[in-house]
Amino acid sequence: MSSTTPKQLWVIAYDISNDKKRNKIAKTLEDYGERCNYSVFECLVTETQKQKLQKKLQKFVDSKGDSLLFYYLCNACIQKREVIGRCPDLVPEVVVV
Image 1 (spheres, rainbow, N blue to C red):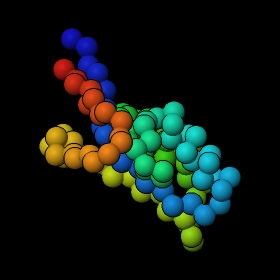
Image 2 (cartoon, helix red, strand yellow):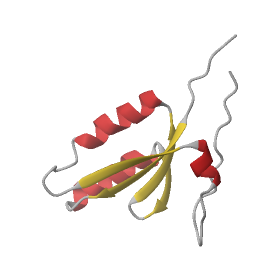
Image 3 (cartoon, helix red, strand yellow):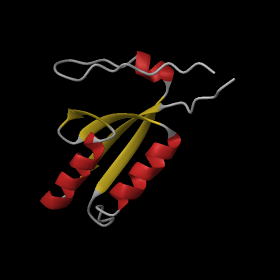
């Protein structure tokens, strides 16, 4: 029997005042998920990937004026997700153990 590390959906939003840092954050997030708004991404990642991502992004955040928010969406919340307008389709990964 093999086990698969489950992926979780995280909504990541940021407000970064420095243009260069903001662009680096966006570029990094593009490697982990889909942009659904100018400064909001949906990322389907394992816990290890999320921790690695947080470590990468932390260096771009000025704790006195910037913010980087991670919101976990459980499966029930994903099912309640509503979209008006353009947003990438979300296909949650089904993990069978």
